[in-house]
Image (cartoon, rainbow, N blue to C red; front, side):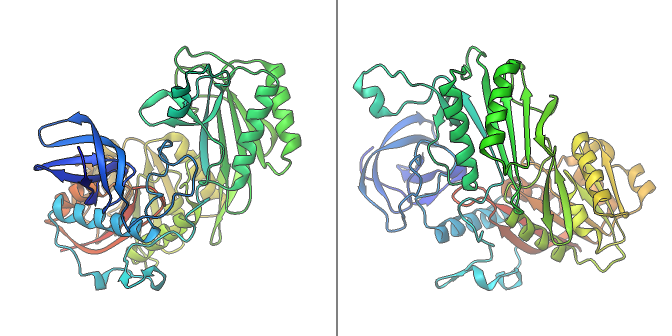
Amino acid sequence: MEAVTITDVAAEGKALARVDDRVIFVPFVAPGDVVDIQLTKRKQQYAEGYVTRIITLSTERTDPFCAHFGVCGGCKWQHLPYASQLKYKQKQVFDSLERIGKLELPPLANVNVLEENKLGDACFPIIGSERIRHYRNKLEYTFSNARWMSQEEMITGETIVDRNALGFHIPGKFDKVLDLKECWLQDEISNQIRLAVKAFCEEHAYSFFNLRDQNGLMRNLIVRTTSTGEVMVIVVFFMNQQEEIEALMNHLSTQFPSITSLLYVVNEKGNDTLYDQEICLYSGRDYMLESMEDLRFKIGPKSFYQTNSEQAYVLYQVVRSFAGLTGDELVYDLYTGTGTIAQFLAKSCRQVIGIEFVPEAIEDARVNASFNQLENTVFIAGDMKDVLTEDFIAQHGHPDVIVTDPPRAGMHTDVVKTILLAAPKRIVYVSCNPATQARDLALLNDNYRLVRVQPVDMFPHTQHVENVVLLEAR
């Protein structure tokens, strides 16, 4: 297809064009680009493709700052100015609420508009991230003995000897890994550690993992950081070769004495998950400490914590503001995770009850509540639709406020029904998926009116957006 004009952005970070009443989805382009497209998928209503030639560049563009842009799937919107990213994320939220939820939206004047979110002549209700690079506190890298080769490398026809990689999976290619030279997502210490680990392993002829055949010594590397400057490194091996493990861990401990928590795992399973694996402490503590206001959180190797620490604080401030707590409320915190929101609210209410499916997360929540001397929190593990029942409410009391932060799939219909039965005065719904959030809000709409909407950008240069809404009983 020749001379196609890109007109808008779409789901999954792609942009779109319309040709002969068919929508064409294309990655790594911007509205206003005029391009030639090679189609890779054709359906009756839509098609997908990639750009073969750029004829005219959009004025709504900026130069990507990462050398891996266009290959790595991590930051698909680097070519869009940050103000444009915020505009499209905000549009995604309000389009979902109107189109999917069929909801009557509050006027923008009612939305919590912050002065610093005024960009140019446009006023953005969305709260942008002050830091748009090096904002993540956790990255997981994969070792591979069959790195992704560029088109230029393949065209030469030469035999490529160096095939080792330590980096990210190529989107849609489970067995291909992009060897990262520099990543802009996490603090520079992450780049230094990753490059040092790869160099040591290659120098000492450690075998990199074969993702198809499931063999090789080096499997994964996880780097976690906190806003207080602490660092956790987890090296994942596939085989229990103690001499090699000891050598690498000693090298890391010596080269990076600032590492707070240095751990390793021998994972011989067919998948990369570590929740069922024994994690061995090599040096330092087996946890890091994160802080937020007067709270401190212990973060272990299996703990969940929002991956953008600074924006998490902003998000929780929005939740607390929307909850409208006076000190005497009973709050249910659904999908509480490790209880960070529950503990953030605890000093402003009478009691918080957090419910979460993952038992290890609930254990973390209890440990941190004790660590912060919060005696008005209760944490319960179990499947939300099985725990949150009429009997549960009769036992623990009708909540004044419900805070819910479900996974991307949204809430089970049984959970929505029980929320309606509980009949709280206010519901604060936090979502990482505006589409499923809008679907759930439609189910609540007969009993609750949408009062406030506040998008928060947690992941600059990606299409992802968090959204917080406040519902009040009609």
